[in-house]
Each structure stands twice: as structure tokens, then as C-alpha cells.
Length: 361
Ligand SMILES: Nc1ncnc2c1ncn2[C@@H]1O[C@H](COP(=O)(O)OP(=O)(O)OP(=O)(O)O)[C@@H](O)[C@H]1O
Image (cartoon, rainbow, N blue to C red; front, top):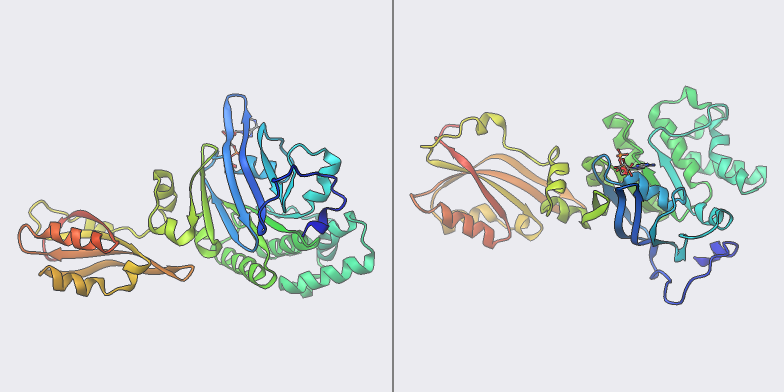
């Protein structure tokens, strides 16, 4: 892997080689603007072949983190290693070859309107001084990969947003980067086009083993393609883990709020009928992994007598793991609701009693 850096001129202090498999390693990175700590001690690793999603609200520090990573911003403290080479502190000249190891795609595509699709894709290779024949062959190969083989001679203005982003992806891959950095790459696209671009990115990740760092404010994007998620807030990583487990059991209020839009909610028609005298409790049951695989409801009915019915919810699959929320109506003999909650908790479910209804919702 290090052969790419023969001209980088960066020397590594002993012991500072990133472990094999880490494409990016960020250690205690800090960057402040006046009194604002935009990035406030971020440590993060992007492993070879994975898709890591970084999510955060507006102002969380995502752009600053990216700008530090691609060398556009100088951090105040901390270190960034790309394929084991430290980039922090390098001169602009020494940074250039390392910068080429990172391909970027952007929200607004950043294509050159006066150049054809093929020339846009080949541009990074022109900058590298590759021959025209080599550039055209690589552009053709990449346009085929992104499904635009018939648009070689077209100009960006004649393309749809999704097609423009496909050109952006092809261009980002031209110089065979170690990392693809996606900065809100689907934020300007409609939901259907977003799905097709995400599916293309996943496909490329699997086919080429390409490592992807994806910055977004949309949980749906993370859910669809990321392996791991890191939640950034006020310049800090406040939560990190496999996507399915963070979705199943978010630890922070910020993550819960970011997940708000895509987590199942009790329909307002039911919540609006909560009544003090209701006999039937409505429970929210969050389950994932093992708890979602077992016949939980059957076991519950056998352990605590009562009438149980599913009023809303279901099981989704994230990275092949079952993750879901069930809204259960539980009419149990007086005083036994606590047993239901304890039973479910003991089997790894998280349970919340939302309210009570009369039997007819
Ligand atoms: N050049 C700058 N000068 C002053 N303050 C800055 C500068 N760049 C960023 N900031 C501040 O740093 C904090 C983090 O900003 P940043 O743009 O990195 O967040 P973000 O997560 O990318 O937000 P968004 O999603 O809105 O782009 C914000 O409070 C922002 O106002």
C-alpha cells in the first residue's frame, strides 16, 4: 500500500504507522475558530473496505473535519494519518500526492460545465500528467461502471442530477483513490435518485473494496449503506458503533433526535386516545439482534397471562440484523403489568409504557 507514497516525502515517527487495514486514522484532532471549537478532540478510524457514516446537525463540525482531512484546513492540534502517513504538518507540496489518495464527491457535483463528461472524469488523470490514451481508456471504464457509457461526449448541462453525481463518482475514482469522501453527496437529490446513487456507492464498495467516508445529516443515508456510524456534535464524537446497534439502542439525546424521523412512532390516532381509566397498556418495545429473533410474544403470553395484540410497528433489517419497534397492547390482570415489563427487559428488549387505552383502538 505504501508504494503510493514514494514521492510524498513524509517521514513517520517510529510507532506511528497506522495498523494494517486503517485507511484513515484521526487522533485527538482540534480546530477552533475564535472561541468556537469547531472540531474538539476527534479521534476516528476508517478501516479498509468499510463505509463509515459521520452524521451531525448543522454546525456540528462535519465540514471542518473534512477540510482538515483533505488538507484544506490546518488543525490546531492532533494528527491525521492517511494509509499510515501523517498529513498534518506537511507542506502544500508534500500534501499533493497524499491528497490524490482521497477522491471526493460533493452535494452540488462540482463538474466543469465547459468540458464533456469524459473530460470531467479524466481531469484528475490530466493533472497527474497521464497520456491521453490512458485518460480516455480509464474514463470509458469508469463511465461504464457508473452506468453512463452512452454519455461520454455529453456536457453536464444535459444531464439529470443523478447522472451528474454519477459523473462526479467516476471522476472521484479516476486516480484510484484509497478513500472516497462523500460530502452530503445525495442531499440535493430526490429520494429515488438518492437510492440509486447510494446503491451505486454500495456496489462500488463491494466490487472494488473501496473505502468510503460519508458525511451526511440524513440518517436514512447511513441506514441504507453505512457499516459504522459516528455521531458528531459540537465538535466531538458522542457515539460510535455498528449502524444496526446504534439504531437499535441510541445512547445520546442527539442521536435519538437525529433518528427521530425514521424511528417508528405510535400513530397519533392511538396516542390521542390515551385515557386515565384505560384497561389496556400500550407499550413501546424496542428489540434488536437476539431479542428480535426469538418468539418473544409467544413467550410473554405463556409467562404472564393476558391479552396481547400488536397495534403498530415491525422489524426492519439493518446490515442483516433484525432491528425493530413493536407497539403492543397489553391487557393484563390488575397489578401484573410490571411483570410484563420485567419479562421483556430480561430478554434484551427496551420497554416503555406509553399510556393506557380503552379496548377499542
Ligand atoms: N471559517 C470559519 N470561521 C469561523 N467559524 C467557523 C468557520 N468554519 C466553521 N466555523 C464554525 O465552526 C462550527 C462548525 O462548523 P462546520 O461548518 O464544520 O459544521 P457542519 O457540521 O459542517 O455544519 P453544516 O452541516 O451546516 O455545514 C460552527 O459553529 C461554525 O459556525
